[in-house]
Image (cartoon, rainbow, N blue to C red; front, top):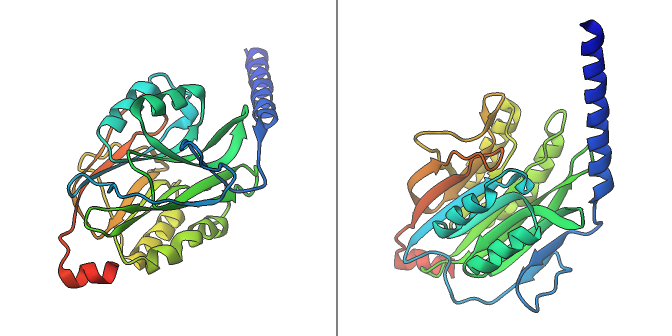
Length: 292
C-alpha cells in the first residue's frame, strides 16, 4: 500500500510540474502596460485613452454594478452566467477575463463597449481585468503589478464615466496581487489609486478581486477606503467566495445611495459574482457647481 501511495504522489508531482511548464511556455508577459478596446479605429497600443461621450452610464439615476472573477472562462456555463449578468448590469467589472473568440462573440452579440487592461497573454490571448458597459468611458488607464515570486502581473483599470447628473464616476477595477509574504507589495499596488480616490470630488466605485485572504490585507483595504470616505456594499445573505475565512471580492462606494447588494451563487467560476444596486444622490445647486 505504501508503494502505491508513493507512486500516486510521484505521478501527481510529475503532472503538476508538466502543468506549470505548460503555463509558463504558453504565457507571454508584455513589457508595456496596454489598454485594449473593441472600438473600431481606436489604437490598441496605449496605456490610457480619452474619449467623448454624451450618454450617461446610469439609467435615469439607477446604477447597477457587478464584479466577477471569470477564472479565464475555464468552467462550464460561463457564457450563460455572463449573459445573464450583462442583461441586468450597467457596468460589469471582470477579473481574469481572457479575450477568447467565444468572449468576443458574447460582447459583439450584446453590443457592449469593452476596456481590457492586459496583464499578460496566454496562448496569444490577452488576460486581465475588463470593464463592460453600454456606453464609453470618458477616460481610462491601465496599471500592472507583478507578483513578486512568479512574476505574473495583475492588472487594474482606473476609469471615469459620465453620470446623468453631470458628475463623473471614478471606477477602479482591481485584481490584487496574491503570492506575497507580508503586505509591502500589496500596499504598493493599492497606492497607485490612493491619491486618485482621495482627490476625486464625485462618486466612486472601488471593486474587484482584492485577494483579501488575510487580516493584514483586509486591514490595508479598510485603511485605504476609510481615507477616501468609501463604504462597503455587503450582501445580506453573503455567499461571496472566501479563503481562510476572508471574503475576496468587494464593492466599495462613495456619494451613491445603496439600495441593496447581493452575491450570486454559480458553478461557472471559482468566484461568485457580487452585485450592488445604487441610486445617484440628489445633487443641490452648490454641490453641482463644485463638480464642474
